[in-house]
Length: 218
Image 1: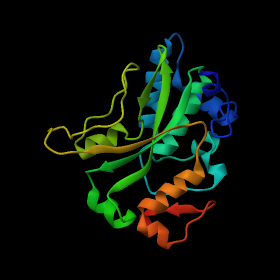
Image 2: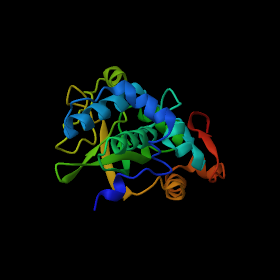
Image 3: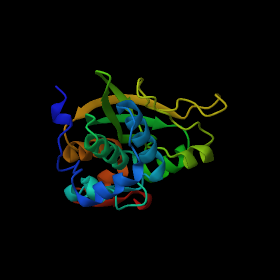
């Protein structure tokens, strides 16, 4: 049932030299499977600062060995990296997509995306202790501190999808609107379809597969 989610894949190319070299930095010796998953989650969450504005529809850009070269990334970039690192450590993992509403920085999102919804939003399903749990390594600690939101922790036992409120508990931060399920690979055509459905500014640009979008300047 889970063997296919351990395999190397075009997107999750953990035998590439650049992935192997990076994983040497993570110091996973003598850790349990759950501890490895937690440490890799925290590493991906905080090593690559979150930035939603570069979005590629070019197939090659969705190889983990390409994503890892960037100094920052969005939720899907970071999900691909986490899946790759987990599989490299013999932990089954797969990609999940969802539609979410981010209640913080809404003005910025509405202005640039033409919507207050973020789609597709990426998360990771991880098989630990004979069950699938969900984790979202998108928002790095520094960004969370800046936004007044508690950093999203993952304990290896329960789903860790979003921070519903800021630290005061008075303001909504993130809301899940729809879960599109999990995928064996990065579904570029489906992701483009979702973006065209939800973002008027992208519709106007006649965006197609192979394009690389600068969402800050739509």
